[in-house]
Amino acid sequence: MSAPAAFSSAHRRYVQSLYRRYLNNELDWVMNRDIWRGRAIAIRAEFERNRNVHDPRELAAIFTKAEADLAARQHPDPYRPTSAPDGTKWERNIPPPVEPIVDHEAEGHH
Image: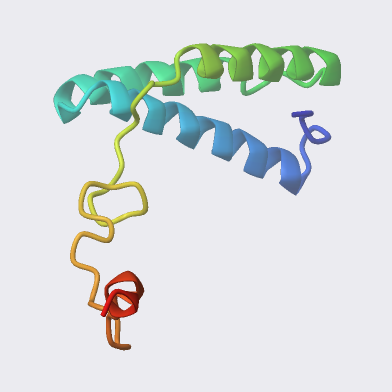
């Protein structure tokens, strides 16, 4: 994924998206919010450290390294809210079909 031009609104959204993905990934690894908060502060410090970088080539290198780091640290089984798709309660109580249930094989053997 290529990074958008520096200091555009697309650039700002990209950085925000990257930051949120980092935070959500850390929350997948650490369920205790007290421990997660310390890691979130470290992530924020890293983003703040690169805040004043203005060189587009250097920004591209930072984004490439950050995306690679995030991909390497991705949780193999990320947290999903229970009612969300792929959650543990997703489609647990599906309503029965409205049309009658007919067993075609049983009808043919009369």
